[in-house]
Structure formats: structure tokens, C-alpha cells
Length: 505
Image (tube, rainbow, N blue to C red; front, side):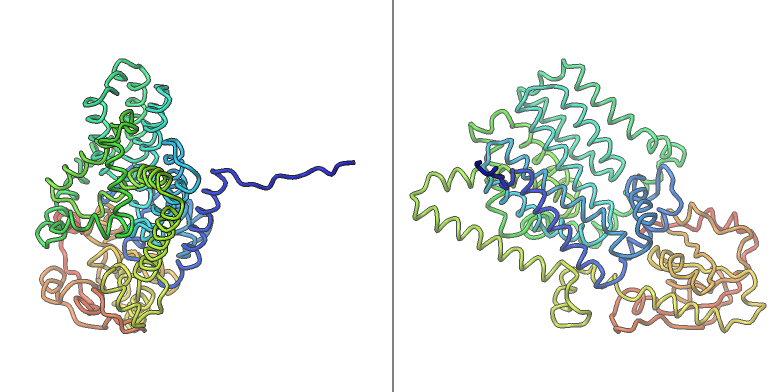
């Protein structure tokens, strides 16, 4: 009897999923080297008091963070799990876009790996940020657009609308991509879909998903627009937007993938094979122009590059096929070698792998300032707890902890219960909306403010401690405002005081 033979060959999707799983595992294995970033500490606090909106961002990312906390607790690996998964999913979608455009298996693998080694993508898989999921929704919109334009099935507009709605519930910058989609439809033969009820159904679905946050914004007088305007003015003032174009080549994308995404843009914009996909060229160029004109930061456009790299992999694959066998082998080896070099570069400089204060860590921290902000938060809370412990019973009665920034407030609220500390209050961002507590504090431990301002607002104050960390890393907490102050908080009317005590950061 002939033995049954089993075929263990993997399909294209299986290979892409395996690559994504590998990417996620790498993130999870390295995500515990340092502590939480200040942005993550604020996100965890917001996740514990869910709402339909927050000053800093829409509600989807805090909701995902809440799920992480329920499933895994407040560990860095657990909190960052879904951020890593989002980046793995973006890899898979990029490979699938390549497949839809006619790319071979090797082209799909190239596209997925090129997306995986984008510095922004690597960083967003190593920290929990709302931008981690914003990246995914942009790629999902692009994938649905390719499916729409290839199949000419207008029902894909529902998928596009759902992805846009989720994007708007994650980061308001999705509006830039929406502008690209709108003009991509109006300026190409895709305008025929304007007569389709499915397009308008997609619009309605996006608005329906976004509606709860829109209502929240109306109730709070569009405070997030005020926040975004203030933050943008600050970024322009200190020069964070001055390198926007240059940063597209080494921050928004890995330098070794630049030829790939340029080829992808050429495919969508000019190649005959890309004619039906012209709207995707506008989905890149419109956000590019808008962000350039409005002085956006370099990484804001990073989610637009996976769809370009996906098409660029098709062009690369066709180019290799057109070469003589020997030349094609040499070109393929050079291409994969460049990809390996780009991977090594981004791992060393972006992934949290080097021991703190090692030469490699210092070099990486000089480029990636987020690494410095992941050091010292538990020690900060320990110093505050030490001070709290030596206060007299009269001083501790009714005392509050006032933080000057959201990292300090988030750290106190995460690690403070272990030491019996009261919850922190702050005038920054969503902490201001949370209020000052009931009853109001009778005295304050103040951190993150200089003594002159503290005396003016809450005086009289005295210095009772200093913030340090075990690694002696110089960051904002240890250099700018390292003092812990005890203030009597002689405030006659807390409601009147709090009404004007808020700022954005």
C-alpha cells in the first residue's frame, strides 16, 4: 500500500505570519531591559480611568492598555505586548499588499522585513504608544484601498471606513491620510466610487466609530485641539520640525530601504502597472505636503511608507527577473546584505538591548532620547516615599503630592501604593481634568517645579529631598528639577486656583 505523503510547504500568508511572530518575540524578549517611558506611565494612569477622550489623545490606546493591565498586570513586557503585535500585523499587511500587486514570495518577504526595520516601527514595538496603533491603521487603510482598486468591489469601502474610524479613535493625525484618500479619489478614475452607496456607507461607519470621542470633545470645548496647537507651537519653537524632509530618510524609514520606497512611489505614480493604484500615490504625497507646510515632525509620516515599500518590493522583484542569472544573484545578495546591515543598525540604536551606561547605550541614548526617559522612575518614587516617611504626623495629615509633569505623576500613581503614598495630582494634560481630590490637600510634596515657583504658588516651601537614580543617568528628573519640596499649600480656594492651574506637555 502506498504511504500517504504530507505536504509541509508553507503558504505566503503562513510565512508572513511566522516573520511577524519572530518580530513580536524579539520585541518581547528585549522590552524588559529598561523601565517604563514617561509617556507609558501617563498612559497606564489614563487606562485606569477610562473615558471617551483624553487631553492628549483619543480613547482607543488607553483602552488597549487597560486590556493589557487586566491580562498581564503592570509589567513592561505585558503592557507593551499589543504594541509589538500591532507592528507585527503591519508587517503582514505590507507583505499582503505586495502579493495583491503581483509580487512573488521573495518580494513579500522583502517588503515585510523592510517595514519591520523602520526605526519608528521598531521604537513603537518597544514602547506602548498611541502611535504604535496609528501606524497599523494607516497600513490597514492602504491594504483595503489596494483590495478595492484591484477587485473593483465597492464593498471594501466599509473596511476603509472602519480602519479610518479606528485611526481617528487612536490619533487625530489620521486626518492627514483621510485628506490623501479624498484627493486620491477625486483626482483619479476612482472618482467613479462617488456614485456608490458603499463609499458613503464607509464614511458613515468612520463617523459612527469616531462619534463618541467627538461628543467628548464638544463636552470639553475641544480641549485636545488646544493641546495639539500648544504642543505644535512648542515643537516649532524649539526646532523639532526643522529636519522634516531629511528625517524621512533615516527616522521615518531605515536608510537602506530608501531605494525601495522611492521605487514604490514611482510604481504608484508613473508606472503603467500601477495606473489603477494611483490613489495610493496621493495618499502619500498629500500627507507629505500637508505635514511639510504645517511643520510636522519627521516621524509623523512614517505610517505612509509601508505601502510604498510594498510596491517597491514588486519593482525590485521584476528588476531582478529582468537581469541575467549571474547579475540577478549578485543584486539579490547585495539587497539582502543591505537589509541585514539595516537590521543591525536599528537593533543597536533603537531596541533597548544595551546595558545602561555601557558605551553602546550612551551612543544609542545620544540618538534616541526615549531611552534616557526609561530610567529611574521607581527610584524617584522611593525618594518621595523616604521624604514622606520622615514628615511629622501633622505634616502628613491631608498631604497631597503635586507633580510637575505626567511622568512623575504616573510613576507616583503606579509605584506609590506600595509605600502608602497618596495619589499624585498635576495641572498637566488629563491630570488637570482629574482634579485635585476631595478633600483638597492641606499640604503638598512638590516635585518637578523649581523652588521659586513653588514658593510663589504654594509657599512657604522647604527642600526636603533630591531625586536620584541608581545608574546616575542624567535626565529631566535628576538635572532640571531634582528637588522635592514640602509646601504648606496656603490656598484659600482650591476651585478658583485649579481653574487656571493647567498647562500642556
